[in-house]
Image (tube, rainbow, N blue to C red):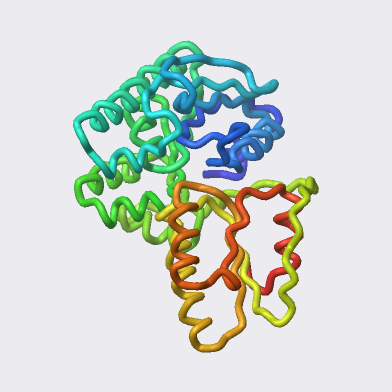
Length: 301
C-alpha cells in the first residue's frame, strides 16, 4: 500500500466501518472497555462507525445512535450476559440452539446493515465469534473484513480441535489480520498459514475519576498489579498459585487483582484455601483514577 492508501480514514475520506464485537461496555458490563475510545479515534480521523453486538438484556434486535458518528445495533439472542465461549464449552442441546441463534441473528443483522448502510469495510473484534459473523456477512455482501485476534482466540484454537478449522478459515480469508500482542501476532500468523499479522494493541485513555478505595499499607512487599476481567482464559489462577510458591519460600510479595468476572468467587476461595489473604487481594472493579494510582504504586504491572 502507498502512503496515500494508508490514510483511508483521512479527513477527506468519509469511510464507513461496520465494527462487529461480542463485548461492548455498558453500565454493568466492562467487556471491550477500550472500544468506545477506538471509535472516537476513528471518528476523529473521518470515519463513521456502526457497531454490531448481541443484545444481552432482552432477546430482540434494536438500534440506536450512541453519538454523532457512531450507531449501534444490538441483535437478538437468548444467552443474556453469559460469554458465548462459556456456552460453547458446555454444548448441551439448549446451548447449541443458543449458539446457532447467536450466529444466525448476528449474520442477518450484519447483512441488513451492509445492504442498507453500505459500509466500506468490516472490522471484527476477535476471531471468535465476531470473525465468523464478519466472514459470512462478507461472503454475502462482498464487503471486505479484517479481524483482531485476542489471546482467547488462540487458546480456543489450541484447546478445542473442533473449532480450529473455523478459526483458521476466518483468519486466512481476512483482508487484514491484527493481534493485540507481538507473540500473539506470530501465533495468529501461524494459524492463518503464515499470513501477515499486524500488532494492534487494545488501549484506552484512563480518566482521573477516583472512588473511596484506598491502597493498603504494604511497605516492604514487592507489589504486583494485574488489571483484567477475572476469567479462566486470563490465567489469574496461575498467578495466585505462583504467589503461593514465592510466599512459601519466604519472599515478601503482594499481588492485587483489579477487576471483576465469572471467576471472582472461585479465586476468593482459592486465596482462602492457600492462606494467601495477606498476599493476594481481589479489589473488584475500580475507577480509572484508582487504577492509575495503583500503576504508580506497583513494582510490576
